[in-house]
Amino acid sequence: MIRAGSRSHGCADPKGRQPLAMIRPNNSVASPNHSSATVSVVHAVIALVCAALLLCLALATYWVANETSPAKTLAIAPGELRAAVGRARVEGKHLIVRGHKQPTGSRLAILSTWQAINSADFRFLSLKLDQASPDLEVELFWRPAGPGDELYSQPLPTGGLGRGTIDLTRNPDWRGHLAEIGLLLTSNTEAFPVTIADFSLHASGMDQQFYNLLSEWTARRKFDQATINRLEATFSAKSLSPVLAAALWGLLALLIVMGLNWRAGERKANSSVTGITVLLAPWVFLDLLWQHQLANHLDLTRHLFHGKPAEQRQSRSVSAPYHEHAKQLKSAALPATPVKLFILHDSVEHDFQRLWMQYYLLPHNVYNHAILPPADAVRPGDYLLALGDIPGLLPDAHIAKLAADNGELLPVKLEHSHPLGKLYRVVDTTPGQGWEGNR
Image 1 (cartoon, rainbow, N blue to C red):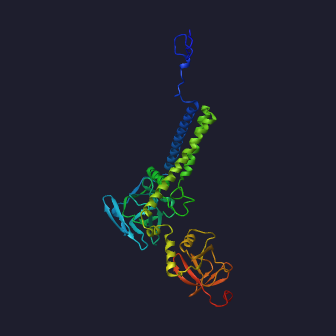
Image 2 (image 1 turned 60 degrees about the vertical axis):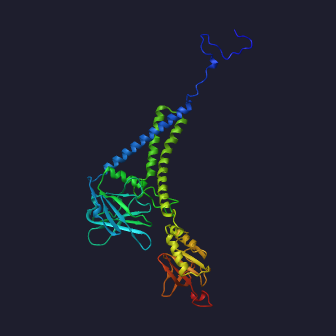
């Protein structure tokens, strides 16, 4: 019996149990949608792992099927390498190399050993450098046996994960019997000393195949003016691209997911979650490889420019040769006051060299828009800077004749010569007659 003024907080159970209104729902229980999404992600991870294992199995089977020679190794001991340029000393099992400073400021070391080697017996070269500088570039070179002084070379991967390993059979010049083999190490900065921990040739082996693939995918790429638009996926051509491997991985995992969903009767929404997860994983894999290259480039940039004076930073930039060329022109050939100067280059549009030369030649009035100068704009006293080989240039003892865009021959005099180009000054051999007297 309920008395007046009292409240009933629920309907009492006849058997004395807790009123029904007092029972609160348990919020810790996951919703069906959340549970289904978790299951979809788990299915995606399982599919990605299975697809990766299948690809690794297929790749290992391919490597084994292509093993044409028994395992054979030629380890070149540190004491066998002779320093033709630079210095080298043996410390235990390592070789410490110091480069020789060149007139350009760079440092160079050349190591070689004379050995009779049959190139057909060895497919892979392995090189391990301890604490190598980011700007160190390494090339393998070899000299064939027999008459002649031909030398062939192959860039070697550095800055990757693990030891640098290259497949030499991808180089068409790796053939026949060899008489000499060695390393060429160059650096534009204080990259030396360099410690060589391993230098060996290998006939085959699963481990060499793996290190070669790892080097192709992770070795340091050369960043230049074209890298902003394109960066090679592998260190050398004809190697398995990580883009192709990622695409096959994602496609195979997606097929596995579709098969699992078809058998389990998954709903369309859950299938979408699984598919997005499967397609996202290969993209993350490629992005990690890209981030590795960016980290390598960051190390190189810090090594080259951090804390260095302005002049030293300029000498280490990719445009340093053009800066030096323009500096010589300004100090030895061009007047101090601005003059009209035409840049001639065998390119239809602007390219890296002519744009940097235009920048470094300021404040001179630079025309930089064609291969040949416009005849109606050229006057005596103007300058023509020919970068590279320009068609129509007919050199003479003192006066050269340069064809303009309409075929007219302009008399010019050589004022400065440089390996990157030549500077001419337009002269008037017939005063008072303009160009008409020189046709």
